[in-house]
Image (cartoon, rainbow, N blue to C red; front, top):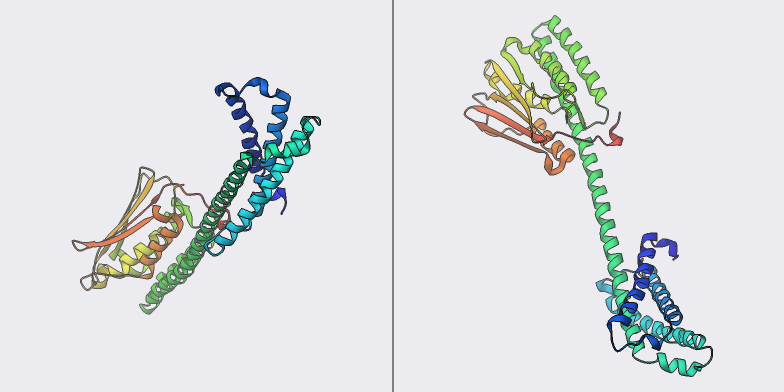
Length: 362
């Protein structure tokens, strides 16, 4: 254990605290009528008080070093207290000898060493004994606070790592799911012998996959990217369903640079297609509404449900979005859905601003 193991600011605070007691002693000369200024010379006063401050500074720093890696816990409480009591006794003896020698030197031999010892061996030692205990308590409180602070930082870092891991797992789940559904749409065109539409769909899929590569490891992308990617997906689906599918975007007030969670719209529209009126071979209209308010972005997707659709529909897309929003924004991201008046409505809410972690770069 070395002094450099203690933060420099802590060393300065400890020394500054004990030196500040000199000012308290000076004030006592002026405020306490029982103490006469003529009883001690100023040079002797400052010498003794500075020596006292340095002594207790050394004891305080030694306590900080000792308890740095020796936390007092329930399992070693009595052993620690016994050691502290022994240490306090030894320090008090050292305190007495230290100041006995100092008084002897300051008196230039007029007070014998035995006389100096008898002058210190008094209530001063009781004061010193309790001062040691106060230092022990303060040192342990300081290290307890530091350990608590360190554990909190480690906990935050662990939560960040877990969030990143969760996001990677969600993406690993989302992208194959998306690819499977896109290929299924193209297969349907082939079965219907709509060869030109299938070729166009393959081109659209190629553009979509290029967009997936552009994502890299990012968790958010500018709204313009999300809109264009979703539009390509809608165009791919319209090759299959034609006029039976219409997606209406109401997003006029959203700046193109606004960061939004990546692939948040595509699974919502996919969900509307697979669980909407197309099930009954009827026209499916999907309404996408996006707006900002009070520094937050609100997204709503609405569509009619099919006649055979169950009240609850939990799929990869919906559960993935809810989990991704929580992993990216914590409690600031929210996702809900409901069935009302024959419509299925999904709502997402998240902060308008987001700082992309460095590790998320492509």
